[in-house]
Length: 480
Image 1 (spheres, rainbow, N blue to C red):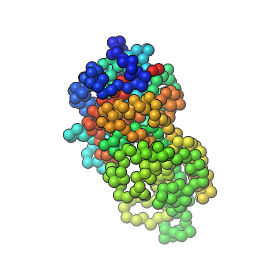
Image 2 (cartoon, rainbow, N blue to C red):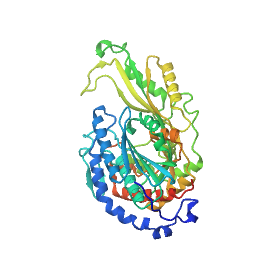
Image 3 (spheres, rainbow, N blue to C red):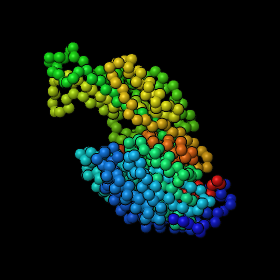
Image 4 (cartoon, rainbow, N blue to C red):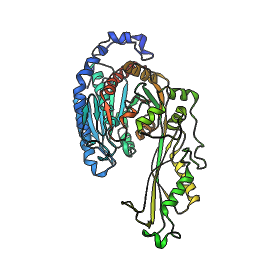
């Protein structure tokens, strides 16, 4: 899409990239925005329903054809809004790349979202997770909030901005491997580096702390994933005949894990684990607390019965600015009904550590491997994958533009927070594209990221369109 007719800039607003609400009331861009959002609702819901019902589960190899089908569908969406769009092949799933061209002299923004989703167990849901369900502005289905709903929201805003002469080139990147750590995203970026050069980047794959208070993250935790495996025999054996002298690998794995970290406090007991951790500053903590967080809402949103600690400040530090050691599953022995009295021959634990800025995933893995080797040399620790942590700024012109756009759309200035999760593509984009990265997410704790009965809602989508349009307009005015 090429846009040639430009809205005039007010020279007094160019330096900071801001416009006042009074100016917005007189600007045709904003005069038309509310009616556009209202008129777009049915289209948004129809497109969300279509893409949610494609099970783009990147974690399951048998869904590879579905991932491609989802990619082809959203490429059609992008072409439908006037963008140039293509499927860029990688060694894994393709990446969808769309481009809306306004003019060679205008700034360029790259928007990142992902279209792949987590697996969903139908037995946990009250309906088929890949059947779209709509009621009173609430949309249910796997992927509605993570991340298909926010992706479509940004797309609808991009169409409006381009159609109303906002002087901004927009690249839209939709990945289909985010949920497995983005193993081929670097391949995509390296091969499309020339097309992806931009002045700034925007990611809409993050969560507010509370519906009543917008939040803009400026950091992401990294992660390192591994397994611990112990084999003590060649087969399961009768506990009545061998119990006592026979080693039990499940018990030994549990002992090693208990020596790695304190289950009561969550603190890791491995030497050197915290050496590179830089504690959150008081300014950061005040901003975290300004997010509207309460432990009661946190427990309710995630259906948690009890926490390790109930102080709000302590919980927020643990989520946003401290590393973790988590056991995701232990397998071994008999898994059927009742009790089968065997001593298993093999056990395996699946482990990950969320990491904070300055921690290096490979160093942390080596610390854990060496520590486990000291405690039980028969336990084999294997590296699976890793994502580096990311830290940005929560001041400067792009952060201020994001804060103003959020206030304009949702009525309150946001808190600046850090995200507890990880987005592998962000680190890759920072490394190769070297432009400022801003996060403008639309998901809420109650939307159920990765959980049963995942959902999204029109309130966040409609506000998101308004927020994105304002942000596009703001950054188009920044000096280059």
